[in-house]
Structure formats: structure tokens, C-alpha cells
Image (cartoon, rainbow, N blue to C red):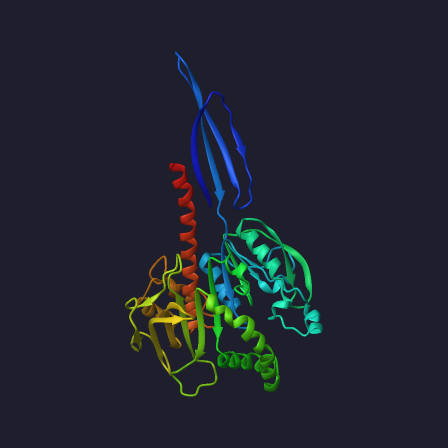
Amino acid sequence: MAICSAHANTSLYSSCTTVSNTGFGQKQVIVFTSNRRSGRRHGGARTFQVSCSVEKPVVIGLAADSGCGKSTFMRRLTSVFGGAAEPPKGGNPDSNTLISDTTTVICLDDYHSLDRTGRKEKGVTALDPRANNFDLMYEQVKAIKEGQSVEKPIYNHVTGLLDPPETIQPPKIFVIEGLHPMFDERVRDLLDFSIYLDISDEVKFAWKIQRDMAERGHSLESIKASIEARKPDFDAFIDPQKQYADAVIEVLPTQLIPDDNEGKVLRVKLIMKEGVKFFNPVYLFDEGSSITWVPCGRKLTCSYPGIKFAYGPDTYFGHEVSVLEMDGQFDRLDELIYVESHLSNLSTKFYGEVTQQMLKHADFPGSNNGTGLFQTIIGLKIRDLYEQIVAERAGAPAEAAKV
């Protein structure tokens, strides 16, 4: 989308000039002239100059530890904007980048300054800031936001090496996901919206056991050792970022089953910061009230232990927030429309869009519980935020043209 303003002036000369720059954020100037003559006097040529600025990317940050659902969230988000997210065509087959019609998602692992061997030699993990190049991260995210292409490095997760760079062109929506999108204040200030996926230790442990024991044959002892080895750096460098997030999806053990330790039924909170420009928190029934709701069993099929929702105001790291909570899981996604009808400020384009998106990705992890529901809702909110930012940018040149 181009943002344009028009200006007119009168000249004695006739000309047509085009000055073009195709880079994002650059101006395209097109000058048209028109000559008018009468039988009695010479009329000047009237010149119209159209100045167009191509829109700059909206930048979104997503932070979470490894194995916490960032990839699934990105697939839900890009689906909201349309088009499948795929690796760059003709590029490195081990690239971590995903590109769709409107979005580009990069993995911040690409800014590792040490490869796998280098980290082992220095005794640091990938979570440690010393293993990451934050100066380059800042420079390149800033360049993309200003509409410039960059040569981004690639961290190869297969080989553990740093591969030759790839070219990233500015998209409409630029998403940076990984361990540290909000760690560096310079990068944090470039974000138009930020999300943190907060998986509790109990759930993270249960998930890792399910994955690594069942799928990879790891022992329980090795899984515990792996988690404990990462925990100090996670607590020091990753977890504190959630205080800066505009929205936090917090995943906890269920309270519907006493002493549950399997992590299959989840209690999920969507923590939404108040006062964020272009973002109005979702609410249940009555905005600002404190509500607990157990849906009617005849309208929403759910097996043991059932489903329970809650909503209300709270504070989070000193910020006023609204919190929407779901405990339990759905049996039939097509009945989700019943829940959707009681939620407001969803930023949907039509009635039932949340349910449609959930059904579209029914095979994604978390589609039967609050993780999938709240990821979908945040995706719709980001789409609305993007549209509002673009509309505001379009309004500024229009107002300037009136002066």
C-alpha cells in the first residue's frame, strides 16, 4: 500500500517527470503537467506532483523458551493474514525464516555470535547474551523497520554452524521470534507489539517428558538434567522479558483435577496490558468486571473435568491488565462459537471468525484448549493493530496535503 499526497502549482513550461525509488519507505514522485491555451492569452502549464511513500513494516516480537509453542503460534498468526508461511524459495534449505504474502518471520537464533562448538568451548548456553550479537540484531531490525533490506545471518540448527547470510526484504508485517526479542532495550523500542509465551515449570517438564521420553527415547534423569542446566540462564535472561510484553499467554496446570501432574489438561491465562495504543483487551460479558463462568453443558460438550472461564482486572509487574482465563478443554471445536459469542473486542471481521480459524487448524497443538484459542485471538488483534497503524500513517500525509 502506498501513502500519497498531491500538490498543484502553475508553470510556464510543460513537462512530465517521474522520480522513482522502489524501496520501502522511499518516495515516488510523479509530475504531470497540463497546458491550457485560449485565443486571447497564453495560459501556464498546471503541474500536479504526487508524492507516494510506501508503507513501512509493522514489527512484532514474540518471546519464549525453546519448545514452548512459538512455531505453532507463528503458523496461526500468518494464517490470519492469509497465505501459507514457507521458507525462502531457492534459498538455504535449513533457513529458519518463514515468508507469506504479507508476513516475514525470522528466528533470533540467527543472531547467535557463537556456534554450537564455540558455546561449548566457552561454557555458555544459547540463552546467555554473550552468545548473541545484539548490536547486529538491533541494526538489522531497525533497517527493516525503515524499509531497507538486510543480509541476515543464518544459524543452522542441524549442523550447529553459522551459515552464509540470506537477503530479507521488508514485508508488511515483520515478526521476530526467539529467546531475546525484548532483552535489548534498543530492539524492544522498535516493536509495535510484543507477546510472551509463559509456560510454567510444571507444564514445561510434563511436555518435555512426553516428547523426549516417548519420541526420542531419553531417560527421565537426562530430561531433568537438561531442564536444570538451562534454568539459571532462563531465569536470568529470558523470563524477565515478560514484564515488557503487551500480551502474555501463561500456561499453568489445571485446577479442575486435584494434584494433576500430567500436563494434558491446562489452565491458560491471556494477560493483556491496558493503555497500549491500537490494542483493546478482550473481555468476557462485562468489561472491567470480575467474572467466573462455567458454560452450559448442553451448549458446549466437554468431558471430565469440564471447562471454566474467568475474567477480570489485575496488575502485572506494576501495570494494569485485563486477564481472561480458560481451564479445561473442548471436545467439539464447532461448538466454540458459543464461547466466542460471549467474548467482546475480538477484532474479528465477521461473526464466528475465531471458531473458523480454530477449525481450520484443528490439528495444531493446543487447538482443544486455551493455548490455541488465545493464540488465535492475539493473531486477530495483531491484524487489527496493523490495519490501524497503516490507517494512521495514511492519514498523516493526507492531512499534510491540506495545508
